Amino acid sequence: MLRALTATATLICAGGAWAHPEIEAALSRLNADIAARPTAAALYLERGELYARHDDAVAAEANYLRAAELAPELPRLNIARGALELAGGRPAEARRLLDPVLARTPQDIEARVLRARALAALKEPAAAVTDFNTALAATATPSPDLYLERAALLPPAAALLSIDEGIARLGPTLALQLRALALEESLGRIDAAARRITQVAAQSERKESWLKRRGDLFTRAGRFREARTSYLEALSRIADLPDWLRASPEVKQLANELHRLSNS
Image 1: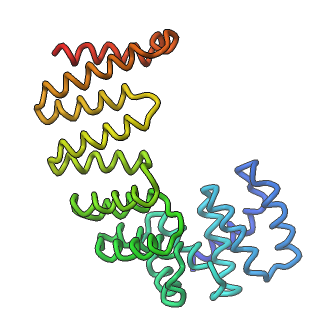
Image 2: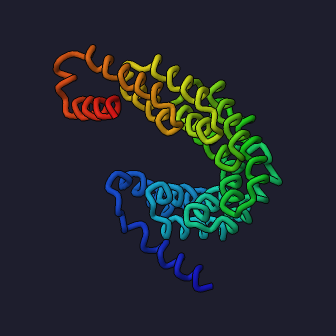
Image 3: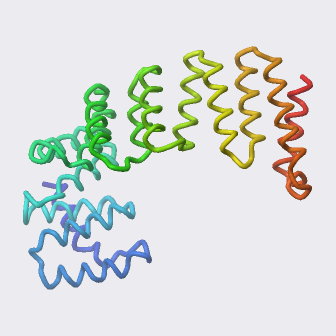
């Protein structure tokens, strides 16, 4: 009851408390619409989502609660409330809101991803992976983050398969490539990791940093001769750069580090 009263008070005040100038026009429109149609639950949902996007959780919750009072079965309402609960660190409450949504509409990808994240936070990795699998299979162009989140719930070998699935589908996205490199190394697959770095370097206009990364990989593995070869190759790439670029502080610092590493 106290939470509802507090939310109601916030709802009354929220219309005039515009902490973000960029949303003033949208809020003005919504406030006017709500004044004209005070029982239109969808307007409160829309205003709540606007506040949520701009990190005003209290005002967002107040609007969601008002929408729930007016129309408890309003489409998207429990998804929005679940997202807010998850962002607020309350995954159990998020799951409670999202379970009925997916029972009614199991094809809802947004709800599926949110519940996967809630399950992961609740230390239920197998159930979370199942939800991520469903979401990825149903999404035409998934974000690389979904593959990364799923991989984080899997043991290294399975995680690498997850990442490679993402690379095969989305292309050599940098975030996926970096995660694959880390997993290859954690599995002791140094040559496979080195091949991945070589492939990324070949696709990059600036190769010197990737060649240093390959040298660092070999150094950690105790393969110092191969490490030195990579460091020297990186220095050779720097030597081929235009004078103005070689003289930049970042490149000079990298070159000095490569000289030190190749002579150690």
